[in-house]
Image (cartoon, rainbow, N blue to C red; front, top):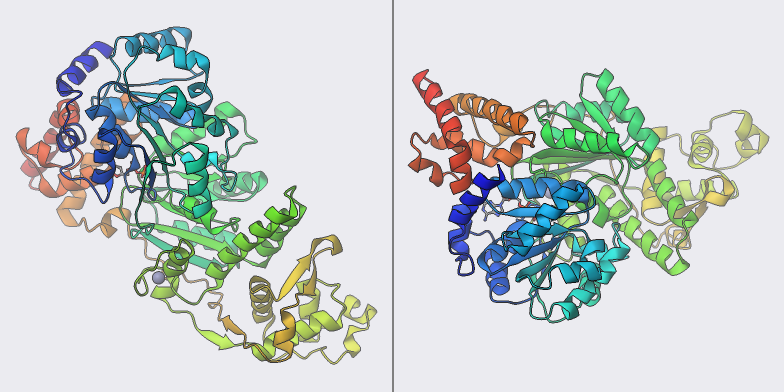
Length: 623
Ligand code: ADP
Ligand code: ZN
């Protein structure tokens, strides 16, 4: 297999060293144009420049280092954080006829020797290594006599302690600059906050690199955030929109991951758990199933996701609030890498706010970091509680203005009403204050509602003026009021006092009526999703219809059969975008195949006949 593959590659890269980027893009990847700023990056790196690439997920970062590596002399060395994923990336490249390999501890001795030989023989276009390995003397010795086209540092935000994926080994990568002077380095990440960016530049010695940024908007992702009410039923309703697709459900704790996955299976949804507490082999097996199966719900902690480049993740659901907008955006960003319509959904409630605040307060960080963490959490809460466009609010956080409302987040689709809650806020704050700032929301709401029970009697709260002062609103609304007061920083939760609510200094301005308080109206508890419960498939939403859709399904079965046979994820054979184009364009001859996006020379040779046969049979059958 290796030989035939090498000969294809040799033919593809006869022009190595003098490769023209557009030519490589067409022949190898089957794409006729670069996207956005890809071309600028590619030209800069081909010419030997260093680059920092800050593009959102799905923008096409991989091509930014792969194409220059193919155009320049020598091997491109890619530093990538996760061994489990190198295999898939290497496999995808091999499918394209690129001579790629990974060198890591999962290889057998013989495999490792074979990779070294290929490297020494100049027979590799791309070599994937872990950061730990890239900084060793042994590695420097190994490549001492090799032409190196470039170093690509993927997931470069791992270098930063500000991020949530900090990997100390990344810090060492700064040494590449001095060890390999003259070799261009390109760092890539989808995390763009200024802190992380500065860390990447400083820690990796990239001060002379050109920084490439692009809009962080992900127009194909629809955002929805709902108030948690009956989380399981709400989740089920959300998942019912994706009968034929795969996605991720994030939970905060391992136990919740296990429970949720188990429960989803009883509801007829194939789900597998993934978290760091699982046996490694099982965890890897579940990840593998997620990549290879077409309809699987992976229930996971945030331990899952980094470096997963499955392009057809159609949804991401959060059952718990993430810790920051950055984390939320990164996790939701795993949906829709292929640019096709995808949905992300989060259910959150007051308990999340309390839990997240506790995690910060009780965490080991110094006070100065805690303050930053609290600030980050508050920003996310503001996005949860906004009555405006979610996308606008998110992008504003990343310093980007979005012109007008986006039109396909929940608040745009179904505008949220607000109400002047100044009077309600005053009552709520007064109830907290009068009862001594010693009680949680449940009890304070009992007081406001005038509920006579053991606790309200024992503490003498039944005799207070605030007792029953809130009867004009239902308890559900009071819960919403307290959640929003918390989100607005007017009250806080004292964890050392069993979750007692306490007033923040800011509350004073509300008492004095110096500040108007606007609350968003929660949606009725029927929990009807913003865009209804339609279960349009991703395919329908990407405007495939009628016989095109039928043909698509046939092409999809063919793809699955080939993928199973080769034991690779289906998207490694062709992404959905290519199948959709095949179904619409219906090429009949071998020549026409190269006009289909995603079909380059190598894939045409490998799969062209098989897919043409499906199209022929379909057309003859009168489809
Ligand atoms: P990122 O690493 O930025 O998340 P990827 O490199 O995985 O993005 O690319 C996302 C998807 O877009 C892939 O399926 C890739 O093949 C596709 N893609 C990238 N560049 C182009 C292009 N110029 N034309 C068409 N498709 C592209
Ligand atoms: Zn919107």
